[in-house]
Length: 382
Ligand code: SF4
Ligand code: SF4
Image (tube, rainbow, N blue to C red; front, side, top):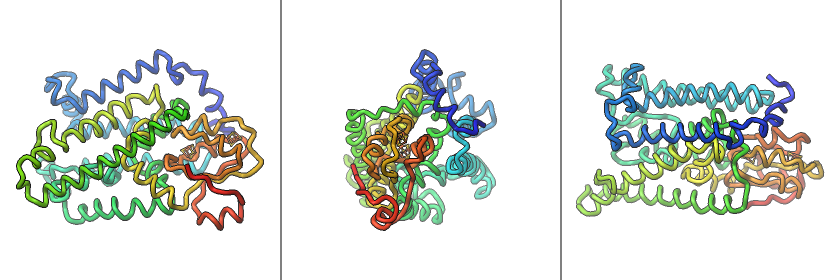
């Protein structure tokens, strides 16, 4: 390990595969192709062929392409974690955070969904149609609060889904910021922080990208909430209104439920969100489209989390802004001696880690007391 933690900084702009060179485009093309096959396999006429992800899954003895995907995802995260920790492992925060990311992925998002059916039915072919992923909550896993999903799982898991999404997640975001989820638990954030780390400096910090981010992410959040409400409504009236039922949950590709899955789940989260890592940075999905990030961001702005700035220390080197995976111009706050809370911040801690002057600190504390005591500066919320 590089004990100074600076090798990563110096190498950032030297390696063509990390700076939108030909290799980066090649990797993006492979990722986009992979996600297209995964999500649109049923529409591409590739069933049973060598391009069929189900064929890959059976070749390694897994019962579905999604478990195969979970296995690949885990391998990518472990490899990415090693890469990340070799560069930034001299920070305790980073070591613990990345270790938690990997354990959550391997245990909660791969192993448990794989083995749970055996415990409940003893027969993997009779498992619930709804495989349960403990680390994903509504509205990120939009189907978690779908009435059909809730009915298909044991009551204890239905309660876990509801309380996790509607009580625990917002409360934790209020007290600890959205980092508890986006940088510690979530598989999307975990992949971004490990496998996606080589490209974190490609995230744009321009005003135009910030404007796009605000509009896009709140639109998806609104659609996620509204469509969940409509699904519940349809369920409550027992699908009695045929046209409404067909539009909302009818099973055709153009029904609301299917469209949400294709557009948000497949294209925005998968094909674009991960496929464009090597070109636009690893948080395309989290920053611009994730409804969970949008919702938790609102609680973060109301809550205790912030990046505290020590006054009079910044030398304007720009490392913090360069390394912010969410495109936040941290330097501008530091130059102005302003502590801040931004809804987009996922609390990865990299801005504080790469700052050569120790200007920045991630904090969870009642605002006024902590500010009076330690910083004495106004908080800026943007
Ligand atoms: S502001 Fe700092 S902690 Fe927040 S996302 Fe950017 S680099 Fe991570
Ligand atoms: S806060 Fe630190 S990393 Fe950011 S510009 Fe100032 S000195 Fe550089």
